[in-house]
Image 1 (cartoon, rainbow over the protein chains, first blue to last red):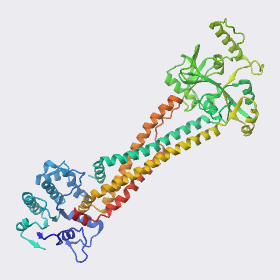
Image 2 (cartoon, chains in turn cyan, blue; image 1 turned 180 degrees about the vertical axis):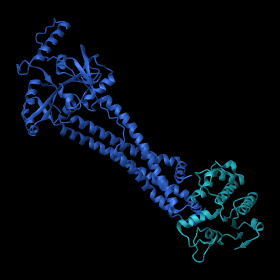
Image 3 (cartoon, rainbow over the protein chains, first blue to last red; image 1 turned 120 degrees about the vertical axis):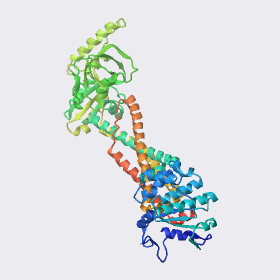
Image 4 (spheres, rainbow over the protein chains, first blue to last red; image 1 turned 120 degrees about the horizontal axis):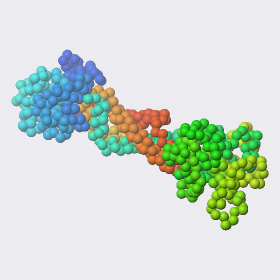
Length: 179
Length: 424
């Protein structure tokens, strides 16, 4: 699903609400039958870590850790650390295998965004949220990232929600909401 | 992967910040721990050697010098005293026992002390090999002397005049080693013990050989000296005071009655002798040391405070850069407590490494200092074992690390993740 909207229309706010990073002042948000507006503190953090993968506009990493170690984090933080094998497989899928032991800062912007996608997929979340994942990328990279997001969310059976103002994506999704 | 590893990797990614904090911590801890080590060992040495010595009788001069020279063997003696006069003090009913010492020579910088067998017995020293000295020019080596000079039973050596090696050698008067003492961790370890007679034989009283004429050959002189000394050796103090010119350097006295501490000094008022109280002099010395120690301790505490500030600033500063990373960790399932632990751990890791490096520094410092002290005073202070007070110091250091990282950790807990991620 694609949510289109200009800047200031509340796209990111909506995404953060969906991710449980923000609390709604009223109403409720249900993910996989769980009302996340009722979860709090630690439970919310862990629920998010397990069920929601987030891709941001610009890819950020823990700069003191390698690509491989960064990919280990989602599992580690939710209590089920992925094996090296799983990580290498994931990196190979996204064509990043040779970067496993590099520091993320050394990768190109496109590679960084692919690594961020890999990280979002690591816990096989039911919901993948992407906040302007293509706006910092050129046409080729943007299309590649969208292709990867759709391909892998389908492969893992995850729902994909992209919020963006990037008109290039409009025709790639059947379900569009314009804010 | 574990959280400590993540903390450590972050510290390592900022090597300069880490180096500054570590250096300050290590020096603060190092100085304090070295002070503790030196203080404890000197105190122990001082107390062990002062054991049961209530008074020291010697020539007039600085009482501290008298104590240092005769009890600890680290200063020049204040002079010699007449044996006859000294024996009178020993005979005083207020005195239980007096152990006379005569010294002023050395063998390869180890002092040669003439005394009787009560001297080693006083420190509970036991013989390791051979027997205690008997006749004149027989010597027993302290354990360190034997180890350092490599002399064995039956070996002979020449003594030098004065207290350093450069002194004129007493040619042709060979000492012979009859025994080696077991280490007592006391002053005896660094001494060569012999009889009073040996010392008297080497240093005949100047007034004695009056008959000596310029025509005398060296050989004749020697014969005269030996003859004189053996005559002296057989003399009893009562057998004529005027002819007995033999001298002691000091006498270690044990009181029978506390009154001795009051009355003995009175009786010596008009003589060239004095008595000094080791306990009083050492307390005075400790007080002097104490103010020096205070200054160094204060400096070390200032360094510790600076290291606290350094740890705090480096963690606090990096927090600003890491805000996004920390919010990211929350978005991936990390809890507030995860972030709190992450940063507190960084403080603890810094403190831990700083403390360990500090203990390393103090050991190296002690090793250097002990070599210096050994060279100059023959005292061994190289015991490197960990002290209880150092464990307390270790605890304080770790606590400092926790304290310095607490506010940064608390800030990390309070990060508004939605806002941080949206601004990123």
